[in-house]
Length: 211
Image (cartoon, rainbow, N blue to C red; front, top):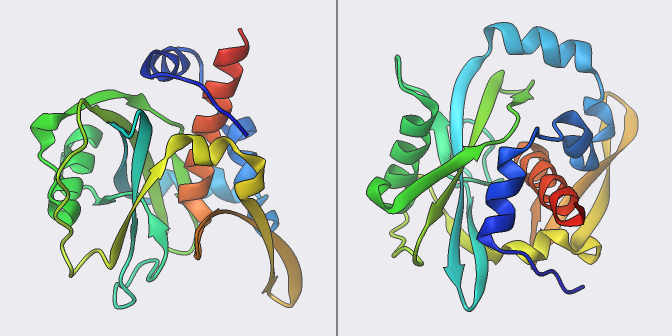
């Protein structure tokens, strides 16, 4: 599937009202379809922020994902955006950029904030995740922290617009089989909050390109 969009398309998509849950639902596991729980959990959840970084590479826009080490207490082994818990009165942009610097050595001054996606509540860890979309004018030199990052995955954004890269995994939850959607990147599976954020981004850009 050929996808042609530019940074201007991204800016325009983030300037319009976001698709929110309508976009997120494309990658929400069937056992998470409880929006009363989502609303209740969002009231007193732990606050966190992640960086959805865009940058030019090989003539197109890329983004950065990380594979979390197996020893981490929250979401070990999963694929995620750089990010973590907010400190005290930090703003979302401050948390996202600080965590990206700590995890992959990204200099905050290189990143231009473009906007935010709709927040996501994660019941198992009781986190509310804010997603900052940022742009670096050139491909950064990443220096992953081995204590927080097992591997970095530099991925073309167009990869996530191709339905061929979406799969579904059956999973037993409380004795009931559910369908869990994921984005495939080689042997890696991107699911959960990260996939949900990417799905809203894809929806926003796709809808913007049609107008």
